[in-house]
Image (tube, rainbow, N blue to C red):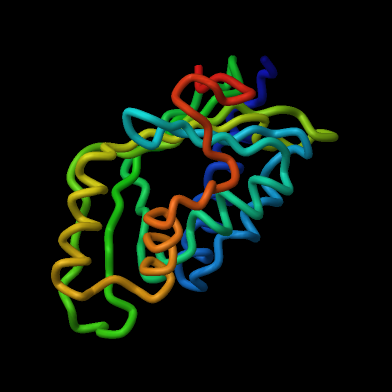
Length: 187
């Protein structure tokens, strides 16, 4: 555990929130990889059978911020509350998942019900806080329901259709592990 001055973590949080907003606007989350250490891990649970775990900055960029975000163009993840623990060098951010239709800016937004969030442990990288690990949490059942609603209403983006086709074809997705068997534990 690395502690940081409170002001430094508050500044880090503001930069993180801005890079999130920029990624949402661009529909490209890969630039966020610069916030991670080279050996960082990023994981989350994906329902009752699988966990996702990305090992190292390259996998985080290519899988978590790349492949996993394909088809989510137009989605927003506005942070609602951020809690900073400067003694432990940890940050927890609570966000919403908001779906917009990039093809129809007048379409109403849809929000995934439930609480989503990211828990970060930071490390000192030559005087700069960087993410050593990140764990996300969200209500998978509500995410799944919204995906089904989008499918039923013909509102899936081309990227999301491609993702679902890969899954239905049984393609082994990188970073996916049977529940509890990821190379780095969720907890």
